[in-house]
Image 1 (tube, rainbow, N blue to C red):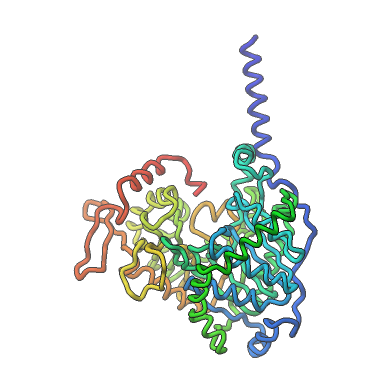
Image 2 (cartoon, rainbow, N blue to C red):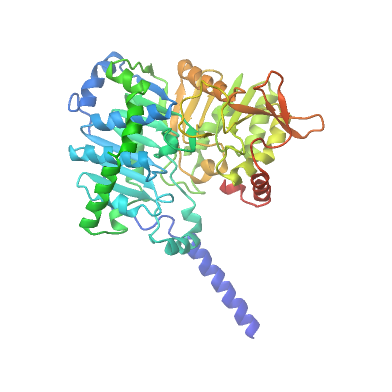
Length: 515
């Protein structure tokens, strides 16, 4: 009798546990008032007036400027914030509370002080411990901050228990990156907000890529932002916690003071010397204008039962499969899976040139991701895919200036047949395909394709990357082409024994779907 009671109790426990895990996909419920992008005006703001002659000269076209340098990428955001007179809509996966994070927060606050409406949407997974700073910004009457799929519990212990209870829903994150000023200027790409993304970190900086857009595609970006802002997943931070007005004012004063410190001034001096700043203030910016530019994104809430045709993977995977002559992919986290590996093998099988640039183990900041990628390397090479892994230390004086000692890849882009391509937040991995929401720019334009192709070739060059190959016995090797005669390495370059061991152990775990 007791055994049957125990079994019944266990069944009930499992059932209740399942309900707890699978219910409340996004909680707490969104409670903020709906709002939308403000109507465009002909000459209301400085940005309106500056762009008017450019837009009139290119009706129906979108202007695009590639931002590959971190300092230029920061400058583009700072300039647009300073010139904004109507709105700033900012959407990010990560916003670090470091030097550049505080500088950007200061720019947003200064804009709000001028009467600009500022909306900030952040993913909550990386916002742990930032509530006081975020609430301080949100306290400004012209700033509203919402969190995507947030934790109810704002303290560490509570967050852990909530993560266990809502494991399925909390695994869905917003990976989008968008900066939109006055509905006229949009910056879309791979960069989050933080020192590593803007060439300001003392140790490691990312090689990354954004597109600055002007024109019709910016309205698409604004529409995407509104959809996320008004979705069930976006919750006003003010409903999640509170602080005394005095504490918030003191904290905000600290942020603004740091943004005017000597360290900030030294970085801003580098920004003032950037090519983009110089070109902007002498009217030397020359966007490429095209009708073949489109801003796209996943739906704000991705769930397993959805129509996947509306997902980013439903757009991007068929594009790659249709390449005829060449498919070149840049992805810092590259875990193609069985389906992706078969897709790439099919391309090479019909004579299409396929090349991949991704992080080496030494450059990769997530060991588990490298373990997921490593199991497909030999098969990809055997099918004729060219694999290049980024060096953590480039061997050329032409490298963009970094203050840190090491680099890592963060660019997410591809180019097909020298005509079509993509730049954005989408990695070739299961997480971007199935779990995270993603955003980016699709283009059908040979000039833009040539720029992405040039970036691929630069990163694949021996000065920047190792070529992964196979020795006669089938074992993997890495070719260092910086010497007169290529040096063949028989183990993961620049990575110690412990790091290699961690990757091997990670490869034993059934976690590929989460990578």
